[in-house]
Image (tube, rainbow, N blue to C red; front, side, top):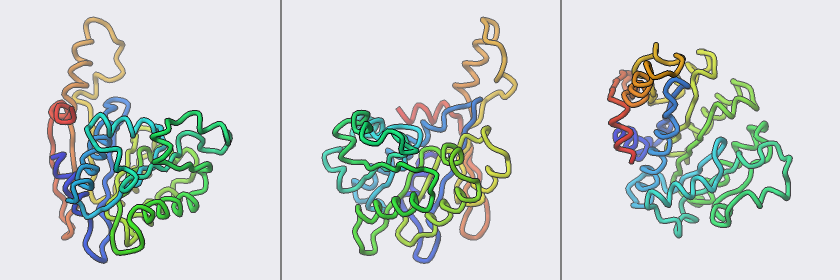
Length: 265
């Protein structure tokens, strides 16, 4: 099921269509969305490096982790960092999101990560953010007909600094850009009203939900009697994916989250 998601993002969209878009949802009760995000990110990176993806580059919009984290992640997964200047760029919205640190920021980033990243120092300005994403994507692929993919590691962080309508607007505009092959993002759904979550799901062609095995177990006091139940809840959570097809039909797939976690290792 995870491979189906990755292949859909790999294949991109047809001429004149919006790019495939994936929302990854988790919650405090089952906080494994970032693991799913990292898996999708590394799989798509492998496809790009192997020349098997419609996309020829990847822009990572990093809100919740530093560029150094993503460099280390790719290295741990055996991905060639030496050639990364040609296919990946990290837009750093994490280190100095409001432009307070200025010249001090270089001390927070490794030299290797610094060579692959650039700063966004006002995450409140989504028009500027949109321009930076497109600019960095075009810098990877040039001015031809090639396309690039976009990964946003926390839409929840975006909403902290901008309105819901403006965040939905930039996601829609990125998805409809003719040089964007695919886009995916992570959402912590229990931090938001259902209305916002529904808007993002509407914008998406795929929605991957990480859900607890036993919702009732979450929030219980941790003691020896219920510790095993809590462990089971985290190990045997549910992983649901909803695909919206071009003909309007919806296909739903589900699996055990523990099986997916084993696949990610």
